[in-house]
Each structure stands twice: as structure tokens, then as C-alpha cells.
Length: 515
Figure 1 (tube, rainbow, N blue to C red):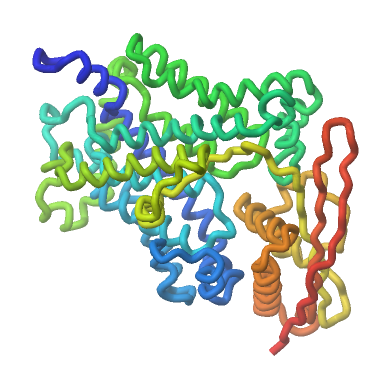
Figure 2 (cartoon, rainbow, N blue to C red):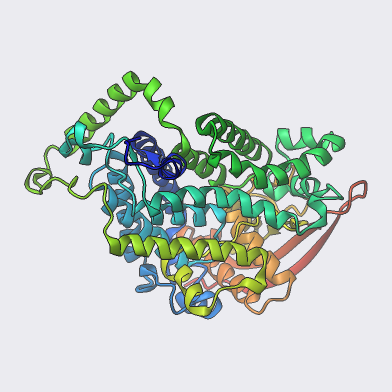
């Protein structure tokens, strides 16, 4: 701290500044996560984002369209254009990984994730929201200031150790809002407090991974489960305070990082929530204090030199690298215009999260529209205030031209085209889906149908038509699909000590054109 700095300035920088090495570690880990994210997304480009898939654009506009939610993916409904967008997203992730035009790459990732997010609402979960929001705030940060190709243009002595701005305040608060407001929402439900049964209901959902070994181990210990339920809620509420203590900040921040790491590890082994725990752990890298990086200075110097050298070798053949001026100019400074935009968005996320817990404090429409424009609209329920009690799986008997009957749902999820039709509940329900994304899609459709929402049946018809087209595109002759039925199997979790019941519901008959 210089002599010109006041104690209050020192506190704000200490608590809301980000070490450039922590920012670089976050960039690299997050870019790797983005690459995996886009590779997983590639399995469903045709299904989710084209007009010949399960959600044509006109249906998306009718059901979930918003005038301020823009999407490049909505411009054209053909597969070629969607794959082009996907390719831009993957290339942007690779550029972010090596730190090549880092902020442009971050914006490219955000734009594609934002576009796909607003194109199909049926497969969305908190993980995708978290990715989009972190990418948004990353656009305001000097992501390429360290361990990157961008940083090769910056003299080492000109790099500050920490960066402090409205954006650093926003992204650090954003990471902890996921826990804090999820915990506050849990206080509104009795199952997280006096009853202590919330985790019982969460772990009873096999679609959420309730048959995982750690989940089964916890379910066999009801007393421990009842103790862990309020413990988790209060850890989410009070844990974020550890990151901003004015006294021994590094010590308490370390405790906070380790505590939330253990929590995410428990979530990973107990339930199936896709990318969510990985994103949260990567985001915690932003909080690692400078003192830890200083102790690892020799390792980080070698790592930084290696990564920068690798990036340079990878891109040495590009004239673009040689002809353009250094990107470090202004890397550590945000203009007043961008600072103001970041501040406005920070006010929005605070207001939005408060309004989720207290709807009477909802912001006016023009403020709410900021969430749609930027992708910052958020609601961190995380099984609160009440967790779902609905397990669901679909059985889809398909009749072939040869007269044989097979389960089309097994073929769709696992690629097995001769599976017999079975209505019994699978032993490991969370594993019948191709990925977690598909379990979200089918669960959302089941909830809409169960609640008699008007578009549930439309989604069912679109899915059935898609399955017919896809099967008959791959199989001809006697193996062609002539018709299929769709059955929904529902199991509602009863209170502790009672046996669940399963209901079987026929939903739809789809005739498949053979031409």
C-alpha cells in the first residue's frame, strides 16, 4: 500500500481486487471447461437448434420469446448456420485458452452461449446461466494480462499485481451470490429448516443421481442427513462472509475456498447437476490470495513462460500476431463508459437477486430488461425453497415395418436399436440419458405435461416427429419406423418411511412417414 492509499482503499482492494495470476488461472480453467461445454453441445446442435429438431423457431418465440432476448441462432433454422455458430464458439474457447485477443475471445464465447441460451429453453439449467454470466463479466476484465499470448506484449514491470475495478467487484459478488441467495431461498421452505427433510427429497430423485453410491450412503443415515440439511443452508448464507473479512483476509478466504470446494465435491458425488460444481470450483480460483501465488512464484513463472511460449508457437504462423499493435495498451484500465455499464449491471444483479427472495421489491420493467439484453437474468434456487419430488422416465415403443417392436427411447439415448420395451424403473435412472442435458429436457417436458401447461403437448409432438425423421433417415426397408407411442412414467417421492408409487400414462401416438 502506498502512502497515498487510505485504510478504506486498502480494504476494498484487498477484498475486491483480483490477483492477475488468479485471473489467468481462472481464464485457462474456464476456457478448458468451455471447450468441453461446446463439445457436449455438439451432440444436440441438430436436435435443439434447427427447425427440423424438437423446437422449431416459431414454437420458441411463442413459448419463451422476449423482445429483448436476442439470439443469432434464431436468424436461420438450418443446420449449417447452427454449426457455424458452434464453430465460432469452439474457436473462441481455444483462443481464450491460449490468451489470444482474450477479451474478444471471451465476448465471442458469450455471444454464442447467449444465442444458444435464447434459442432453446428446454435444456437449460443453472450451469448454463452461470457460464453465460461469468463470460459477461469476463469481457470487462484483463483476462490476457498474464500467462497468455496477449501478455507477451506487456513488459513485466508494467503489470500491476492486482486489478481492481467495478468488474472485479461484480464478478466476485456474482460467484458468491450463487450460494448466498440460494441459501436465502431455502429459508422460505420448511423442509430446509424445522423439518430437515429437503436433502432426503433431493437424494430420493434418481433422475438427479440419487442412485449414486455416496447418495445411497447418505440415505442410509437419516440422522446425518437431517443434520446436513440446515447445515448446508446456513453454510450457503454465512460462507460468503468469509471472503470479505477485514481482518486476516487471506486466512478466512482460504477457509471459504476450501469449504465451498468440499461442498461442491459433495454435490458432485451425491447428485447429477451437470457442469455446475465444476463451474463453481473454477470460479473460486478468482479468490485465491496473492500470498499463495507469491509462495508458488517459481512454479508460476515457469508455468507462465511455458504457456506463453506454447501460445506463441501455436500462433507464430499468423501474420495477425505480428502486424497488430500490442493489446496491452489500456489492458488494465476501463473507460468511464464501460465502468458505468458495469456498475449499472452490478446494480441490476443485486436488485434482481433480492427481488427473487422478496418479489414485492421487483425492479421496474426497464431495469428488468437489462437482464434479457445482457443475459444476467438469474434465479439461484438450488433445490430451494422446495425441492422437486418428481422422478420421470419415458418409454417409447416403436413399431418397425417388419412388425418388430423396439424401445425408441433407448436407441435415442444410448444408440441401441433393438432394445425390448420395459416399463420398470431403471436401477440407475440418471444413467439412461445420453447426457445430463437430455434429462433436463425430458424432465421439463414431463413437468409441463403433468401441470397441463399448454405447450407441453406441442413439445411432445415435435419430439415424436423428430424421432421418426431421425430413425428413418438412418434405417431403411424392414427396419423403418412406421409408428411410435409415448408413455410417461412418474414416481412421486413420499414422506420418509413411505413407499413411492409409480403411475403410467400414455401420451401420444405418432405415425411415421416412410417416404
